[in-house]
Length: 320
Ligand SMILES: [Zn+2]
Image 1 (cartoon, rainbow, N blue to C red):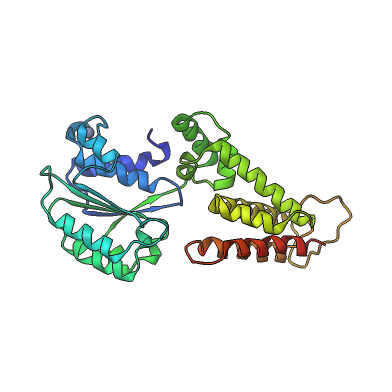
Image 2 (image 1 turned 60 degrees about the vertical axis):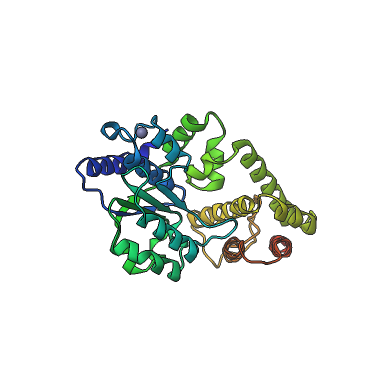
């Protein structure tokens, strides 16, 4: 199921390939979850397909093996297990692999995703391959933050920019690709990242989002058991739960900003207040910082239960 919003990029790549003008390295710069990895896979099938006239035909053995990432001339490099970084050894292995002759006499493809998960050393290990690519090499670097890559890498890749689809477009695609579901709600939780949504179980996302909202409202009211809630959150679906907390906070920040209030606005109000209105903007931003910090340290060996408990206490302590 081709994501419609990638149409222009697909056409450009197809045209370049047909004219034998495909560059040997592409940097696919995507909005998070907008389908960069999907496009990289498509480009791999484009050059590996056994029916060049209609590539990628999606039917031949090459297309099918490539789609399953089991084609001998396709190497997909991702961070290993829970890491967010691509290691130098992985890049060296890829470079060695690309230096060999293609099994099927055509292209050899390397996909690095997320390429901005390469540290400086890993990126340097890729440089020689980018400078002197073996014949028939196609390197596809997928990145949401290419500015994290060294300029020496960026200058040797042709850039493909992918925008995120609008909400309606994303929902329509999810329905076509995955069938009916509360996709609007799922996108609210996961952001406008249709690829993340496509990989999710919509019913589970909606359920967890509801559970998190109830947990926050409980904490705000000064009730609940922060220790038990923190332990439960730390045990399952933590990244998703943090995304829910982040959304809850940004929604309220956005609401406050749209309402034209500012940082000096305080909690007192004469109208009836919805959950979270007891928090002022500064407090909302403070809590948001804590959530973002937690999100970025998911790799680190910290005590998540404790960190979450302190976050929840932040909600209740500030609600007076
Ligand atoms: Zn094919």
